[in-house]
Amino acid sequence: MRLVRLASIPSVDRLLQDPRVATAVVSHGRGRVVDELRALLDGERAAIKAGAVGLASDAARIDTLLARLEVAARPSMRRVFNLSGTVLHTNLGRALLPPEAAAAAAAAMSQACNLEYDLDAGERGERDAHVEAALCRHTGAEAATVVNNNAAAVFLVLHTLAHGREVPVSRGELIEIGGAFRMPEIMQSAGCRLREVGTTNRTHLEDFAAAIGEQTAALMKVHTSNYAVVGFSAAVPEGELAALAHAHGLPFIVDLGSGTLVDLQRYGLPAEATPMASLRAGADLVLFSGDKLLGGPQAGIIVGRRVLVERLRRSPVKRALRLGKGSIAALAAVLRLYDRPDTLPQTLPTLRLLARPAGEIRAMAERLLPGVRRFFGEEASVEIADCQSQIGSGSLPVDRLPSAALQVVPAAGTKRSGSAPEALARKLRALPVPVIGRVHAGMLWLDLRCLEDEAAFLDQLR
Ligand SMILES: *Cc1c(COP(=O)(O)O)cnc(C)c1O
Image 1 (cartoon, helix red, strand yellow):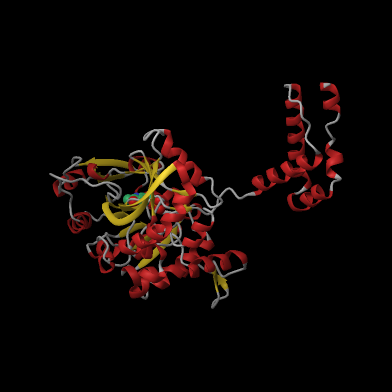
Image 2 (image 1 turned 120 degrees about the vertical axis):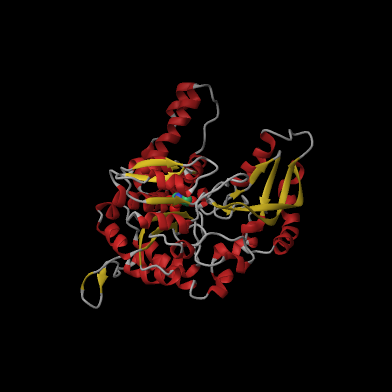
């Protein structure tokens, strides 16, 4: 019996004759279709050997084949709804580009462009030229250059200015950023020696003064982006560090992490350090990210003294870390929006989401409540709750923004801790546009601050 059934499994060639399979060959390529067919028929053979009785029809086999091909063809990187409560979520892609920046990136990548070509002179140009003037205008710097991300900026600056020499850094600023960016290790891989000064909670100017010697290449301050030292603490103001560095003929470098080009307080947000303030205090180079509070593409931005920026440009490491043309085009478009700071809360998605009033978010929660309740049915109860959004990506680590969430509580009878809220979270992640919430205190929280496409969200719950 088993042999009979094995013999009646069709050949790959026979299934390839089917018109539906022929169409799949056109859209997916013959190699992919043959591989999936083989895997499907092998699976059927194995099932029969293991004692399965039924035989699939060709129509059912082809249905399975087409479904598998669709799943395999789905792009790995997909849109999601970020209801995690963290606006600049590194794992979810950080800042969202405004439409004009995304369009500029697409145009730069799909057509030839003057990326490194001087149209007046008709000769080789400099890719920084597309953003340097705007960066200088918005920060007050003499010169600017851009690389792949801020970690690359830190690496380039240390490798160029301090290779084989020492850089004193306060023990209170030896940060680790998520994903293995640790200041001591970056310094080591850039070939310079970290000279730790002060203590974890207090570092004074004299600590830096005592650390300066023959081997010192620069003084550096690192913004403690993702944590805060509170209580009995002291750090040296930038102005004093700059003066000390300059008295010894050394450059003063500030790794600002996020950095923002406008005073966030004018939009009702907590104050964040700006490159302008660091430069005014005497910093020679200031380094910050393009896709944190700036709200642009992934990039590392370096602004400061022209002689130092020129040295960075000449480094072979700059070539290895250079920013792609799509990101340069997007950054230029985002910087243009900063010419009109009054309209930024409308034009820049990052600021729009950060400045969104809690009342507006709560009103949306009320509109969504019935649909989300229907979706979970008997599995969970759903209520509206106040919550606190985080800014994320190491920007303003202790500040929270009042927001509203849908709080999804697993139905009584299911465990209030452990797997029950995880199962609810998994169900939302399995939707066509996965919804990413946050499991906390035995419940699933859907912070609605970053939800803008309400209709698409509700549609897929039906
Ligand atoms: C985020 C951050 C970095 C790394 O920036 P990326 O753009 O993520 O590479 C470096 N230093 C500080 C202080 C940061 O906050």
